[in-house]
Image (tube, rainbow, N blue to C red; front, side):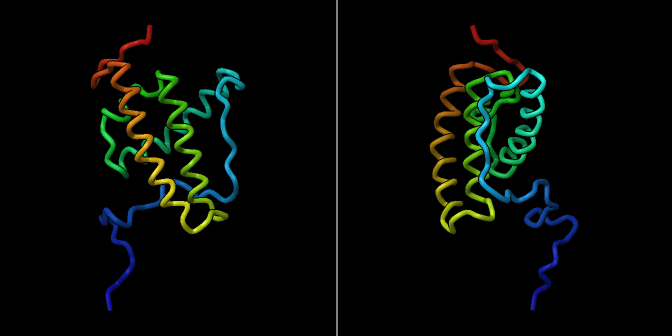
Amino acid sequence: MTNMSPAADDVFFTEPVMNQPVGPPMPIMWTAHTPDERRHRLADLDVWVTWVVDHYKLDRRYIPECWTKHWELIEELSALHLAWESAYATTSRADAPLAWHERLGAARLRLADWVARAGCRPGAHRAAG
């Protein structure tokens, strides 16, 4: 019988970085919040984006370092995060994670398009305009 306890250096069984969503998530309408509220919500979103970039090995073609400076990326990633929360909430249907992965595939195409339009490069943000 194998020992199923995670090892400290095990890349598959890493330490948890987020809590499992418990109930239905609430969409964020970014323009309905003050600048301070948006900064706070963006910091929360950044935790998830950092995780999803690492977990799914998404590179700068999909999510550049400067994603927080592009509203189209914030909106897309916020919606993707919402779909992820819905898929992994304790109240979700059993096939919801599969639907989320399908949404991730579609979102990757849109993210790549947004990033290409922005024209940002590693270490070099291009402001819209």
